[in-house]
Length: 117
Image 1 (cartoon, rainbow, N blue to C red):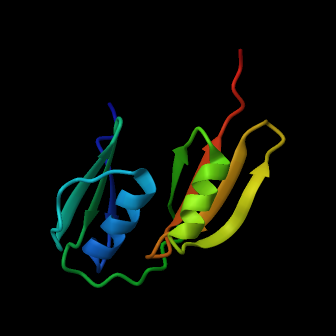
Image 2: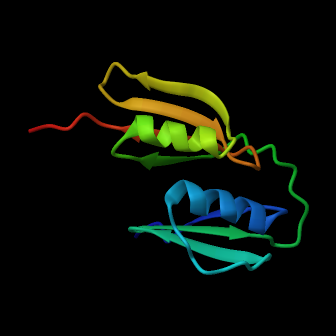
Image 3: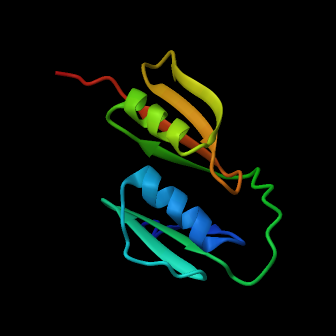
């Protein structure tokens, strides 16, 4: 069994989709205000308004993306105006992690790993 996709439920599909399209450097060619699917490599990310009101208190989930250049991505996130939770920090196990809130206050982690020869 595989996870088919990660879905973000939101009150504002266009705003949240635009944020993730810029973050992921993806153009899905859609301006739909109800449902957008955003593809990046093998990850499927769907942003959807199911008609119910969201409270934006998403405290039980997060998204994590592995990136090649954490410093470049940090600058991109700053440029998107996202609220930074933690700047890039080296972890004891060697990864470099950072975290921030997306426009709906979902927690997003970016991480990079040292390259091994």
